[in-house]
Image 1 (cartoon, rainbow, N blue to C red):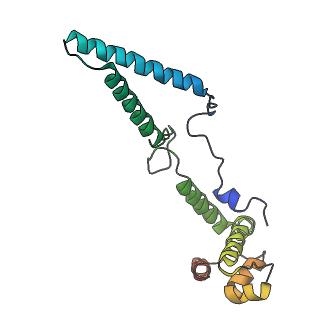
Image 2: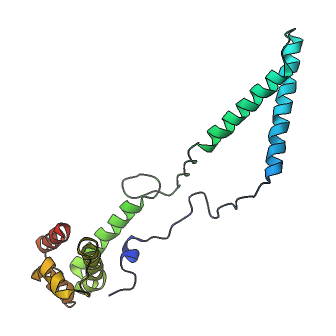
Length: 192
């Protein structure tokens, strides 16, 4: 059995979304944040009062300051519930479909298809690449649905899998089965 297994088939290295390196998050002091907001409210209050007085409107400074503080609190609350920024799209092209960006599921399926196509012609490749992954999927399905693996309870696992699938998983020197046999194995795994 290979050491890579499912990780080898499905696991491409994750690339950061925003570029090569993520920018380290700067720690801001709480007092600096409060001072900036107070300065913002003070400046906005001075501008509003000056504009109102130049228009010969008498308005209470306490009212203007409290209204601007309330507005600032609302803006801060809205900023907290804002959704995270959308990831930047990659410039690389996906596959033959012409879509941009990388789609991990599509890439994994493409790797599966390529492995199965190559394994169709090379029995050794089938034994090295496809059988170990099929065995891992089988063990995982048995573990999730029945709480066993092929190694922990071979008799019960053989009964659940049936003799054809059991023989395929344990006879490493076998040739690649026909498409209808693979379909029947997948059906057995789905019924587990």
